[in-house]
Image 1 (tube, helix red, strand yellow):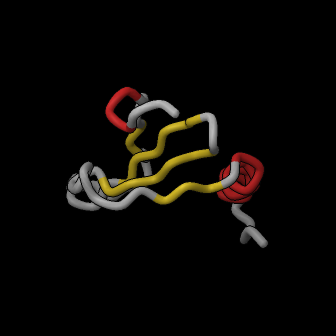
Image 2 (tube, helix red, strand yellow):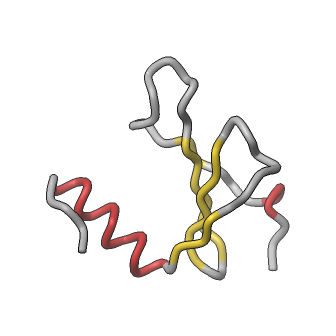
Length: 66
């Protein structure tokens, strides 16, 4: 498994405009990883790739995800 520090973390463009509420995600072999950009050493949530794609698709369409 790739070390968290070696992954490419992407900051959400929908996070707070003041830069105080940023969510980051990275794609890994085991799924999509999500963390708080202000606490990079803190907890990381892993979401299955299919679930993440469904979530993102629903955001783009403006519909709630199941």
